[in-house]
Image (cartoon, helix red, strand yellow):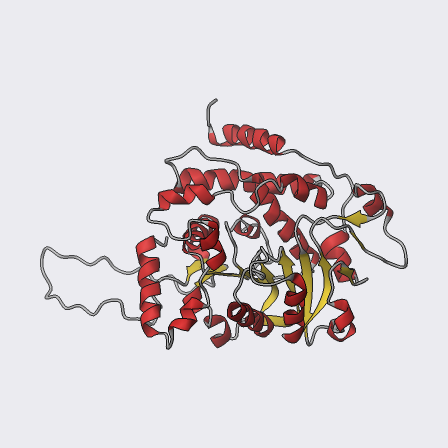
Length: 394
């Protein structure tokens, strides 16, 4: 587990070694600071205030976007609800737990799109995980081999660390801790009768399922030549300053496998530019769009000139359109089979939907037998399940 003092010591050491102060300035979370978000904290106890944040009042929007839930999807989300409560009882026992259902449903909406990208999504990179609740879903993702995260906000970073410890245990690799090649101590002491050193337990190596990178160690992705099936950006592209956006887009392009997808669920608050300007920068970096859906504006999937009847039944308009809660997009890089087909300026626009099976499976496929649930239903079901399984009393 990472404590605040160790995180700051690592950050201070990094700042003492970087060639210019401009390197660290790139990763300043200026928009968070201006909004009054608790970027810096002095105690883990302060993390309770960000257990359910950034997705306020979006539960109904995500439920409508998903067209309701199948029974299997409902059961999965209910398991993550119990995870979220047990997580708080473990790491924040000083305060009554809450059910962060809006944030959990947002994470599920992202996870569902990842599943639609295909069975080969074994490696995932998330830029700016926020509360980090995608981990609650990925811990159950049987194909997972490498889930990596970048985060520049201290409070979110500490919170994500706790979530990952809870979800992945010894298969979680915290990269903000001292580098494994850095000598921690070089002591000398003469053997003493009253001093015994316990023997080290040598188990051999085991590959981590989740790796967590602070801003001063994200270069390891490049130096280790790690690549990913999916790279996702969590509500931050329009919040990055110009230099940070350039760096992160370059990193995405280098680390995304040729056949991989760059998935964006929410482009963030437009603090540093417009969507049109963002699309221009993304094209300049060598990406082609497969879909760009603007928040709350209906988009359709055209397949042979007609939409599936099931999708018509699931949408509130009755005309085969879906309204996404936030801006959503998918891009591919050079080397992807669809890159050349869609790398044209006229496709870099909002409400663009490529009539491709990949887009359909990620954004428009809906299973039968779905129904909408309320936040109250999830609350009551979570309480009932935990009282039954964990022995909690009324």
